[in-house]
Length: 263
Ligand SMILES: Nc1ncnc2c1ncn2[C@@H]1O[C@H](COP(=O)(O)OP(=O)(O)OP(=O)(O)O)[C@@H](O)[C@H]1O
Ligand SMILES: [Mg+2]
Image 1: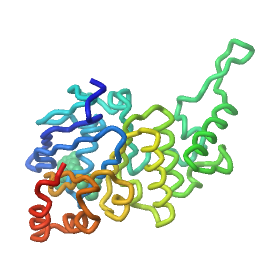
Image 2 (image 1 turned 30 degrees about the vertical axis):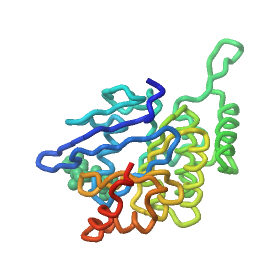
Image 3 (image 1 turned 90 degrees about the vertical axis):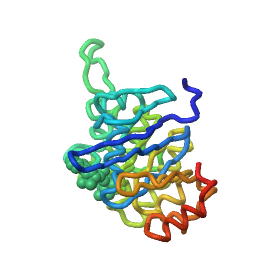
Image 4 (image 1 turned 180 degrees about the horizontal axis):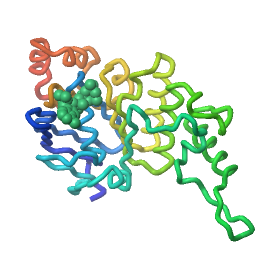
């Protein structure tokens, strides 16, 4: 059902860790081509939710649908095969390997030596890595440069460009700007915008409303394992999102004010 309005849906998902209720009946629906921001404070359940999306956890209750059809991922590999790529906060990059090696990670193009012997096409791989990064507006001086020498923002950009190159339809970014300064955060936000322009649907996890609001089309707020709702940008101001994040009585008033405009 590729004509489903949503590319991904988590419906009424719950997840328990012993007595801890990490997620309690959470619904998250990602529209095709949108940037959907998942906001919430520490311990709200954001990582647990994305681990469910990326196939690390099977939901104990609730349903997971891709293109409108129920799925049951047994591992992150299954999710990746369905075009759902997750860029984790620790990035899974190898500092002592080059930009090219990190870009391909064992999926390097191969050429035949003497028309027979398959060997890694190093020059070809470097050229592709540089070109793909350049397409995303990332300039790397030298493809043989060690990743360990790149800035946090450049590494984050490389991980995103890699996921896009290998065919991600959905990009899940867990706090990509958390460890970055202002300028590098802006670069990552630009990249999120570019991914969206290419028709990729994005889930952007953050607790920074100032980062989420400019690039987000809609916002889901998590609070202690429960969803406080999903709001389209047209229906909610940045200040209202900030207030909801702050919680408490203000939040209840805001929620009452927003009744009828939730999506
Ligand atoms: N493997 C686990 N075992 C036990 N409890 C866990 C486990 N993973 C998460 N939890 C608990 O589930 C709740 C939600 O955690 P989660 O990591 O999803 O929050 P988060 O929103 O990602 O927080 P942060 O912003 O700090 O990363 C927390 O109370 C946490 O202690
Ligand atoms: Mg987390």
